[in-house]
Structure formats: C-alpha cells, structure tokens
Image 1 (cartoon, rainbow, N blue to C red):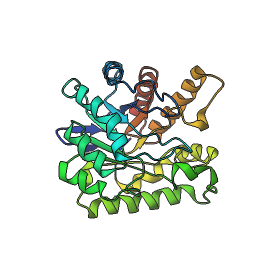
Image 2 (image 1 turned 90 degrees about the vertical axis):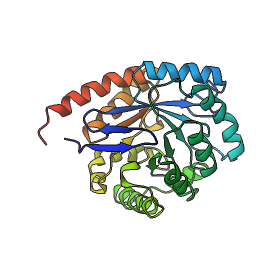
Image 3 (image 1 turned 180 degrees about the vertical axis):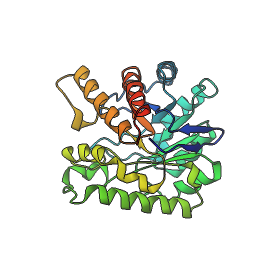
Length: 281
C-alpha cells in the first residue's frame, strides 16, 4: 500500500494515498508539444479549467512557458503576461486548488498573489534557487521535479548509466536545498521527471523502479501524459499508451498523476486504485 501523507497548501490540506489525485494540465503557451496555442485566450483558458474540474481533476496545473525538448526560455515578464490574466479570470471560480508550472521566483510570487496554491517547479530549484523562499513566504505547496540539463540541450545529453540512482540522489539534494530554505517537509511532493532529459527507453525504467523513491519519505507525483516515449500512430492510441503508463505509475506508488486527458485517465486511475486496495503489501 502507498504510505499516506498530508500535503499542506496555502489555504488547505490534501490527503494523499487513500486514492490517487489527478492533476489536470492547462497550457497557456503558444508552443507546448501537445496543446500549444489552444488556450492562450483567457476566456478559452477559463472555460477549459472549468471543464477540467468538471471532468474530475483534483488539481489544475497551469503552465505559461513550454519545457518541451528544444524549447527556448522566456522572460518572467512574458510568462506573467500569459499567466496572470488567466489566474485573474479563474480566481474564486473553482473549488480545486490551482498549481502553476514555473521555475521563476518572480512568476511564482505573482501567481500565488493571484490565487495559486502550488508551485510546480520543472527544474527542481536548479534554475532559480530563490523560488524556495517565495514558497516559504506564502506557505504554498511545492512540486520538485527532476530535470537533466535544460530543454534546449536535451538532445545532446548522453544516457545516464545509473539513472534511478542519480534521480534519487539529485532529488534528495533538491529536497535538502528546499528544507534549508525553510520549506516544510509537509509542503513538498517529488516528481522523477518523465522525459526532462531522459532517453526514450529510460522512461520505462523510471516507471519500473519508482519504488526506489520511497526512501525519500515524500509523496510522489508522476507525469507521463503524452510524453514522446509513449507516442503512437494517432492521438487515440497515444491516450491508451498514456493510460497504461498512468496505471503503472499508480501501482508503483504514485500519489498524484499529472495528465492532459482527465476523463480517460480518471477511468484508468479508478481501476488502478481498486487493484491497489486489494494488494496486501
């Protein structure tokens, strides 16, 4: 069975472990690999967020800067220009907590002021160490994701020899940095970073060995949704592949799954949770 945790956010607590929570993705970017440009307009983004909540998401994760392979970094001003109008439109309109996918302290500060309760840092505090201080000041939840290198250099990275050992050690170091900055243990969730600089075949290895992350004594989020190692001949088949990866993640210990297709993945989550209920380990 998964170890239960209480995840402390800015204005509420989430129970993790009894059932898998679904984090639904909303990209307000022109260039994300799966839905770039579809929800740049604040009204369309608002409608999509409401839809994601109605479909059964427990958290909505809004991203205004793409971290797809090869993508270039954007300024905090540009990220805020895309993000803040959407957060203003959503404020007080949803019952589920909002997460913002950013590594910039300046963006995180404004996002929390406009209602975000979780900061999902794709860089695991490696791009902007000041982000941890922002989280501390506002008592926000923090997702620490493992990333190798930077998106613009991923194609040139060699494969890791001891991949899971490296991920565990580097996430442990990241958590230590967050704790030294004052982030409470109960605010942190870790993510092994499916994709994010790993070679295609290594992502399946991560799913197979997720249990190794249990030694960090923290809740676990996994985001396999629509990643290139799952790509099939068409969108429907890729959704089936994602459902398989989501199921594998849950059976290996994930407390939260980050997905784009909430309706389909909710069905997979429910089956995986039911299987977990009857496991005796």
